[in-house]
Image (cartoon, rainbow, N blue to C red):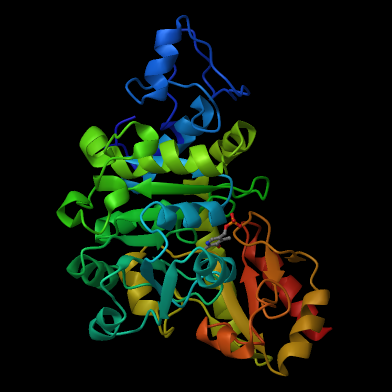
Length: 426
Ligand SMILES: *Cc1c(COP(=O)(O)O)cnc(C)c1O
């Protein structure tokens, strides 16, 4: 479906366009394999000379339809689904980095990504330098090395809610001949489209708002098609020189703007797996059909609750990038004028222990290791998601030990406020 449609239309209809007599609703192609009439037809698929389906680990029609919808929403040329957001982040980098390479990353990122980049990828010989998202262009530039292959950041960081200055990061990345990769999980393309600000590749944990109903773990990688790999061919031999595991084919020559996603599919998915199941892609698609309705409600509720918390004398501090006076308010208004996300964080007077007691008394908001769900949920990162990090690392990632992450759902805001009120009394 063509990209000139507005986001609301793309949410509902992009990706799956049935022909005469086909199902109106995207079908679940619950099949590992696909049938051909001649041996020759199948051989051409394996040589990437024809496009078509042969094995679901590489491609599946349900997944491809949902990936196409996400690509349309972000304004990209191609996308692929992965089994999780973690897999998406790993593939996004591993597609252009190998042992001996390096990348630069904002220190304000999700705890799981911090571990993946700082610990696990290091074991593969890929090094990362973390740097504050507030760093100046000079400081950012100083983190680059001759073997640096990418710059990475989160539009709004989970859970510290710092807003990435996408244009600044894009300028520094491009000055060094590398792409900017942006994790756009929290705003979703409804609130921010990083490609419009110079990002080259976008990643998502679709587990969050895109699914929106906490049913399916998943991820996505979207390519803008804008980065000129061949102009920096010496940095990206995997894309710009022949792949011996594909009969000497060169991705940039054979696939042009589709090179990056084709390599990720044909090489990484082939070798490493991590596909999203077609069943989960179907559920993700149902979520996407209402993303444009849910995001404004999340944002409206979150702002109302942040304003309530700010005025409450039991509350020590409130952090919400769309709240006037917030350190990131101006950046949030620039990149997300219609609202940022439904996640806020705050601390209570009395610190860590009071936070834990408060959470135990909530009834509408549930304690779960999840965010960005239709249902309001709450978490104490220092005790839960980030418990493997030292206090020093926590502060570096912008996570205070007393921080309560409050993911505002799409219920009635007054009911959520009443729940907070009674839990604070208790
Ligand atoms: C949750 C999350 C991830 C990891 O995604 P999973 O789907 O849980 O693997 C990555 N980035 C951000 C910003 C997230 O919120």
